[in-house]
Image (cartoon, rainbow, N blue to C red; front, side, top):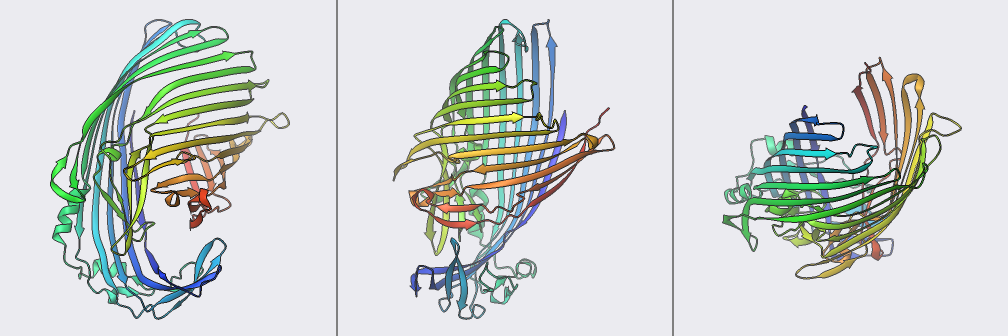
Length: 567
């Protein structure tokens, strides 16, 4: 089987920010106040992303006899990524300006701007063109031999295999950095865009004139040379695994005991920085690790209606290549007034988890409905998380992100699931529902702090899903409504509890409808986020945190044409 897939995306991320002075707040009440302006900045950013995935997969199976099968699989793939980015930021120190604010619900809003925002001098604060390129090649081959493990096979059986994977990844960024400080006041214009709920209009940088009038500022040679190297890296990884599973099955019980040996070695290359200063040398992180990973799975049928499952296993989660070898990447113009600087960690270790699961399932007569209760627990050593630290530097807030290993984490929970594909009162109506309760904690330590957090990253206390499907046989189609609820969850870990970020709980509803057209085609229509739910981000949610961001994505409308031959 061969495949080729491409996705192209254009994105404009322009913004104008009015930054107040926290030492210049007057007329303050619990509901309103007046703030002196520190500076105003306008950012223009345009990206063109292109991703291509291609590959070839092949294999064969040899049935030696009724109980024995030899299978071989091999595949090669290539992923490429290109991003052309044009970015510029201008700023004015508008100390003659101030604004008033009041609260609109949980978020403050600017109600007026005092002073002439169009009379200031705007200077270039940053400008660069980035051409990012990356590719990843993966080759994998796997061979398995199975004896007496087909569904329904009784007695002793086994399955053994080996797998080898080779990964080669490279990223290269070519950049042009321009000299800052030049007067760009004549490039500012009034787009008649008002800040949300404020009625205040600010000057914006005329993006097209800046880049296309032929009057670009001089190139900053030193910065261009530095950043042309700083974000480049290369990573090679080889994985060799061998595994054996022993099966024993009776009419009521199926036991699988497994053992996997996993060996990983890697080599990387990235620019070497010492105390934040780029050197002429390259860091060459290399290393590896190996693990014995046992597992035990038991399935027991008490009757045709009741089934019990139990499992215990050890697993690992490898760091991503960029987490290990990436030197430094800057992403400007998102979330903070400065840039987000992401760094790798060559000392990062894989997460290691011990997992326990218990489940009890009941199947109703007819085979269309079941109910299941599952309990699980994960004990994680060296869990991987990204520490985020906001630092004010030269009047802007830069955000530093680096992956680290936690000392210990654990998460446990219980899930109730119900499925009915055809109700007794209407055979074309089906539904599924599940609800999960979770609890967890994480401990981590750095050179400057040690913390215990009462949950793990991205773990809500409650989750629930409900899907209702109505089949329409006459058009070979169906209507489906899906609802998803997620409780608050930790979305980002900061250097202290006040810097943690949480996503607020929300319920989203999606709607889809599909039908067959002329036998071989299916038309499908989808509406995501039917009720326009707005995600909300809090800082320090567990400590009476404050709402800091509300996103408005609206609904998503999709139409699919699917070729599905019936012959």
